Image (tube, rainbow, N blue to C red):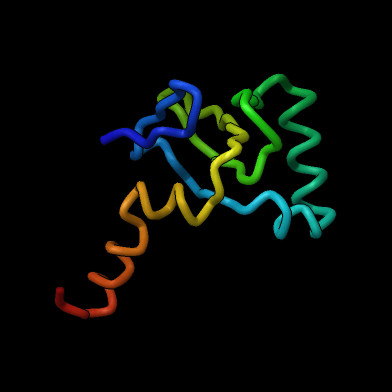
Length: 95
C-alpha cells in the first residue's frame, strides 16, 4: 500500500514511522533541532504546493530516515493511511 502526500508524491506505508502536525510538534525544541539536523543532512523532501502543515518520518530499506513535508494536514494523511480504522480495531470495537 502507498500513501499520497500531494503533488504526485507517494510513499510506501510500511516505510512510515510517524505522521506529525508541523505546527504543534515544532513547539518542542527537540523536534525543531531534529528537523534542522535532517535538513542539514539533506534528508528532507519538501513537497511543493503551499505552506507545509505536516511532516512524515520514513525509514527506507537502507535504514536511513527521510522527512517529507506536506501541505496536507496530518489528520487527513492519517485518515488516508487508515490509521484511525486500525486504532479502532486494536481497541476491540467492531464496525
